[in-house]
Length: 289
View 1 (cartoon, helix red, strand yellow):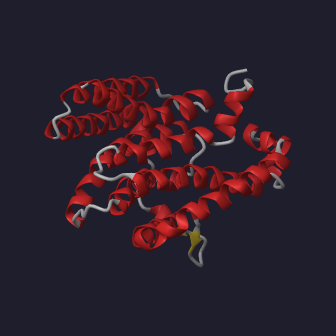
View 2 (cartoon, helix red, strand yellow):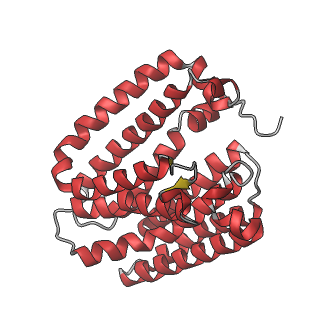
View 3 (cartoon, helix red, strand yellow):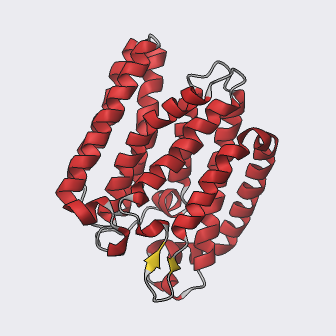
């Protein structure tokens, strides 16, 4: 049956959200690669991996007792593994808290706005006549908000953790460089969710259609690739400026093949995997070059 995930390893990677947690960590380590002293950033990457795993786990466990648990394969998996997931999520959350606690005084100014924005987006608000209001009603905000929050978490905070001083302007510039990549991938997930998203969300594919959304995502990938090539060449990593293109080519192929179909492997492994593939391509180029 199309869309079913049968392999136990894939089920842990997808339903257990280990893969997306690895993607978060890979993006942070990508930023740390260009810091003079990346010890704190690497500690933060581990905390982010554990924290992402725990956060996703808490939200899924909370839904296992609801009526929708019988409809979704990932929630059925959580029900079947509820005891082990409760233990693992609790341990991961505690470990993330311990690792993150000494870093909190440095990063709270960036983390709190991201949390507040997320809260006001995911929480639906309605007017007295039942009409939806708030951030969720702003056209295209879904993908933009996801991209900005990801960029803050994986770029701005690691830069702030670097013992070497980075000006606010420099942090904003480097953070904005990562936004087009995450934005492109977020649009691909909007294509996946096109048939189930509330039309009031006004996502990119709902407004421009599937082909229009793919063209926009492709444009953002081109922008991101251009930024990275110029950035790497500016640092003298000529080989890496070529190898990074392999990761972007992978993302562009996935963009062309994206469809509004819930295929867990395609989206949760391959599309999310772009966030792992690109840093790996950069790392290989830096090592070889």
